[in-house]
Image 1 (cartoon, one colour):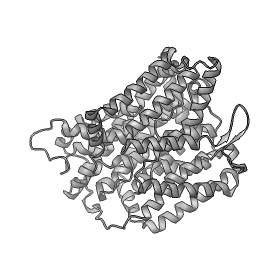
Image 2: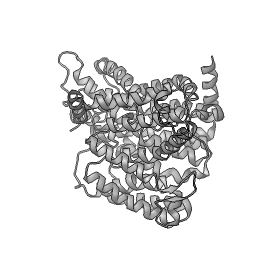
Image 3: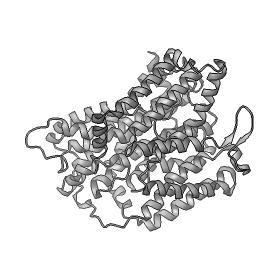
Image 4: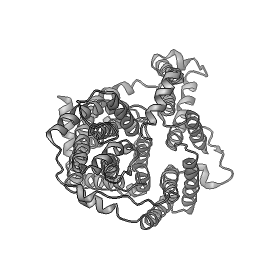
Length: 504
């Protein structure tokens, strides 16, 4: 009964004219940046962070959330039509979706992606609504030692679940932790690693790093790639509804993808990307009907499962961010930054101190998923037109928008220079095949880890055993150790590498 009352409060908040308008704007913008290759939700949300100063907290977060799960929908459009994943989590969708488009079945592929995404997004929202309150109650039992241990588990999880080299992921985490140390010590008030630069005494701006690495870095990387001419299958996008056989084939895959994505979305470093890869791998190992197309040759299960998984993962990744204040992926790290900008302390107190924000955000997710079905199926022709915009016109506009946004943060050129520096660093990471996401997680969690570590040691009078003797803290550290041991096993290491090579 309490859950129903909370959801009614959420819908009364989400259905206000202002919040519906911002949810619609976020969904449209999310679909747009999902459709345009080279732009992702991380870069877009980073660019828009300066604009939320003028908004109330609830519409600001509803808009940013709409951008995130909207991009999961939009990314499938380019993956299916021109074999260019607009969003990283749509990489595996391109394998079978593009082949279906070449066979004249782009409509069925787009419908499977859109309807599967809506089903998964709706289920993911219900899971958030159901599991968030009990997790919040558990979070109130957390002290400084437990928070420190949870963040250790989060960082190790981010390393384990990051694609590519484990060594590179660890290096990026450490780099993020080190950058997070550039600030003024909260206890002594002494500047650290500021090198007598006044602007660095408050630390490097989160928005500048995110916009530099993900915004500027992506633009430089895109300009470095050769322009390729690909056929856009606009002439083949006719009847959007799949056949009865398509529905029979796709529905079990949607259920499996939704279940897998809902679980993996909660894990640190997981979210939509890992969910889509894992769902595709699972479908390849699942038995299909005799005579169905092979995977990679236009199998509709290869579209429905990863698209369902990435949307379910996008929704459930809000659970640790809303209940514990721990971001499981870079987009949630940006959402934590947005909450901090609006003066809201992320964590378990959000649900009790800001119930309209908490439940309004959850209710807006369902409305947003409904809007996205309308945006992505009947209006598919509009999104296809956007694919014809030359990148040489697109990237200067993005750079100007980024520069204006950065300058307005503090009315200071310094943030623009920092972002430009991190843009070069982002390009270097791209060339070295280093994933920048762990860096952002390390930067966000580093100062929080240090603060909780020092508070725990103050409370225990310097006794380090407190981290092990407290049951909850000890269990979290044990889970972190177990993750390290498991990922070190040769068989697990091979499976992990295989899972991330499925898109190659």
